[in-house]
Every structure is written in structure tokens, then in C-alpha cells.
Amino acid sequence: MARKSSVFDMIGPVMIGPSSSHTAGVVRIARAAIRVLGGVPDQATITFYNSFARTYEGHGSDRAIIGGLLDFKTDDKRIKDSLSLAEEAGLDYTFRSVGNASVYHPNTIKLNLTKGERNVEVIGESLGGGLINIKAYDGFIADFSAQEHTLIIKADDVSGAIAFITSILAQEQANIATMSVSRKGKRDLACHVIEMDSGLNPITIAYLKSINWIHEIIYIPDIDL
Figure 1 (cartoon, one colour):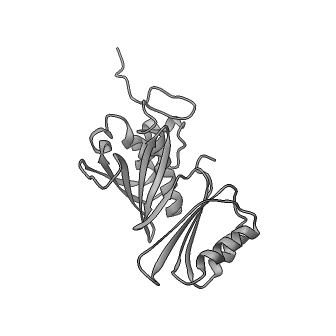
Figure 2 (cartoon, rainbow, N blue to C red; figure 1 turned 45 degrees about the horizontal axis):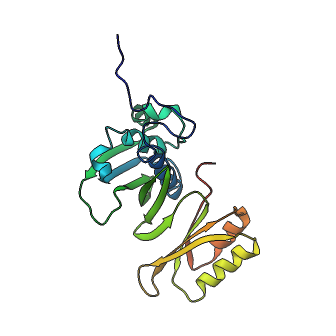
Figure 3 (cartoon, one colour; figure 1 turned 120 degrees about the vertical axis):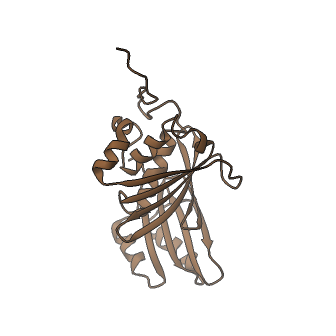
């Protein structure tokens, strides 16, 4: 008896499925998001926007995003069974779709994730060729690719904050590739997103966490490692 073919029948060295935008990029968005969260979520609300909203089921983006939330890499054969594996892992998820959101990139996914008492919102864009951009985190502009070592710092908007943080990184000879700062308002909470060519020592991260005007440190190595 002939078996119905699946979009996940094609398994290559770096992606699963017919399109790197709909599979590899989606997996990477999810893997970046769970590193922001701090682990595999207990609950996830996943909103697909624009072209993703129309194609996410047929092109396998639903399985890809759940696979990424379970921390499967892009070439993991388990992605094709990720929906059932999520149930086994205790991941409660909901899919939503918004077909016409002009403010968002055509291939955009918003992830509202919960793990214990921690809740985060991550908005990611799949740019093609497996490349991604994490556009926003908890309402702050983020704009990082997750291909570099990434440091996210939530801190009070105090004078000299940028100079202080970059000086600490310079002492460790961490070369900054990109840096952006977004804030809620003047003297309000700010979010620093720094992409670096090399990683950081745990003692440096611990020191930054000890600063009284720094409220949160998230360190994300290259998600494909």
C-alpha cells in the first residue's frame, strides 16, 4: 500500500523539509527563544503572521517550531514527530495565525512562553536560507541573529551604562560585532543586546549579574553549537 508522502521525507545535513524558511529558520527561532526563556517551556502560544499564517501547516512550520521548542537541532529526524513528542514532554502549546499584519516581516512568529513562573515574549523573523532575526524580546527591540555569542542585559537606564558594559567585555577581549540599546523611556528600563565573536567566561557573567542596576543577564552562545 502506497504511503502518503510528507514534507519531512527529505532529510538533509542542515535542515528537514522543503524550505529552509519554513523549517530550519523556524527551528532556530524556537531554539533562540528557549534560551531567552531558560529552558524548554511548559506552555507556548505560537502566532504565525502573514505568509507563515497561510502555510505553516502545509509546509511543516508547525512541527518545526515545536521541534525547536524541544531543543531539536535543524537536522534532527525527530522533528517530523515533534507534535506527539511535545505531549510526551509535557509541553502544552496553542497555534494562532494572523494573515495580514503589515507591521511584521512576511515570515514572522511570535512566541509567548512560560516555564514555571517565568514568562517571555519573543518575536522572530525567518529571512531565508535558514537565517533568522530575533526582532524583539519582551517589547524591546533586539535584532540579533543567534549565530554569534549573544549577551542580553536588562538594566536601569543610568549614565555610563554602555561604557561600563563595553569596558568589561573589552577586558575579556570579547570583540563586539553588533550592539543595540532599546529603552522604555528616559531613565526607565533599558535592554542591551550585544553580539560577540567569542564567548564569555562564567565569572564575567556572574560579575555583571552582581551590579545593582543590572536586573537580568541572558547569555546565548551560537544556537547551532
